[in-house]
Length: 279
Ligand code: PAF
Image 1 (tube, protein in one colour):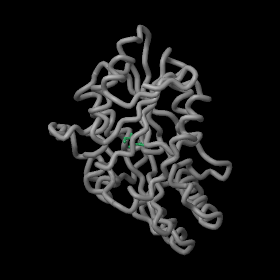
Image 2 (spheres, helix red, strand yellow):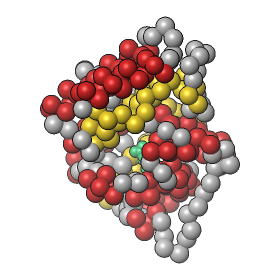
Image 3 (cartoon, helix red, strand yellow):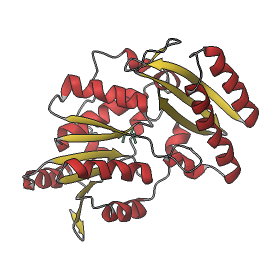
């Protein structure tokens, strides 16, 4: 274990267990894959409001990447991340190796019984993605035993999957979703934005404009979505999906009923961007 002023940096399960045992007050957990931005820091900020201690994990989880190129190019900047977390007042950072999370002598095959959501939208375009997210989070939640966990609304479908994971395996953990942080242009903050050029950022900004336009439509028609997909495609965005959906099941809808969202995913060059707005 290292300590940067008052922030503990934990590499092994052993040091994590010792740290966990030393705490008498509440613990919030913010899982991340690093390359931190204001969106992650807003999760920490919210976590600090309700718990005395905050632990953040940084682990790029190979199991949830269906595209090896995306995994290889995923930005990694650990020193900068640690500085940001220290500045944000985080108490501990868990920096496990692959073997710490997935010891070679153990099997990782946690399944959700309520699993239909795993194969639509993100699950359809990124086969195995949610299975990888479920394995790593089940492992983290078991090792860390947090009282509360914090997730960003930007990964809306992930939030719905985590809610099911918690309902089925970790009823004692309080689940929190924090609103998406945006640039002034409306672009949702994402670690992948670091890979965009200035010209590409101008194009990516249009995703939010499409979502806003669709949010304000009188009717939730697929035709309106198709028109926006066309407009974005002329600008260079290859949309995978743009739909009105019901929550929490993510079924496509055309009827306004309250608990709904518009969800987007698409490629700009080889960078995949997602966003959503709650309706
Ligand atoms: O949202 C992410 O960054 C990842 O999916 C998570 C929750 C850290 C699991 O690897």
